[in-house]
Image (tube, rainbow, N blue to C red; front, side, top):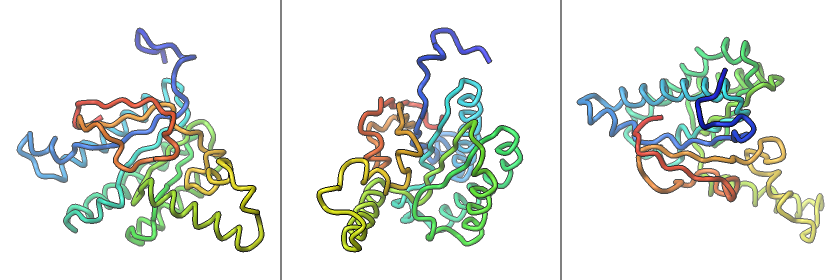
Length: 219
């Protein structure tokens, strides 16, 4: 597909990360209930992923649900979990046909068992795909990621696997959920809704990312 005027294929980012925000406000502005906003957000995300595939972007990471979101009303959380599970299930054929690998990062032990099973199945069935990599962050936070990485490094020191003097950036990166050697760090991080902050998302990985804050409430 030809790129829009002004974009050059050689200058396209390899990895784009997205903080999805503003779904509830989008719904309120239209006199709709909150679930309608989340549905609109997922529809926009699917269109965004299609564009990334067409434009040659290799990796997209989407912040779909943060650890902080567990404090929201249970009814809203249940709806979001169901929407995510339906998205993954309904997209399986497309993932396989388009050569998309799907990876989920975050504390998935907290999500419903049915979604846990879907995550395991989708990741296993798409593991060998290499044309495009779709990473979804569910029950994720950057600080949680870093703390768990530190625990893992400390355990390896205690077990004698590595020495304190051997700890460097590469060692820490390998213990992050994104395993930066496997998933390249994002070149571009986009946040919708007009908020100018990254909200505890990919704190280590986005150290050198270009940041773009869009006023739109959904992608």
